[in-house]
Length: 118
Image (cartoon, rainbow, N blue to C red):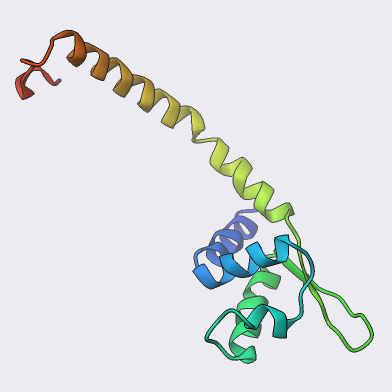
């Protein structure tokens, strides 16, 4: 996967409004008007967010007579999840070390002091 695609995905996800738009689109297609409804924002403001999501490949717009429904394109999200999964073993190892330390401190009983912590 190209780094610029991943960068665009994470940049798009960095904004809470865009994340809320994606969450809404997970339920199905919606127009700009429908997407703007829950926000204290103008339709042009929502359209700017949609352009960011479109550039990241997370949203596409169709044409249905007079409507231009937006729909979720989830493939870039899978790529982001796959990239993040590379760090899973790091966190699992860190939690295992923490579990071992806590188990050790637990065995020392309630009198264990901070000097016992490595």
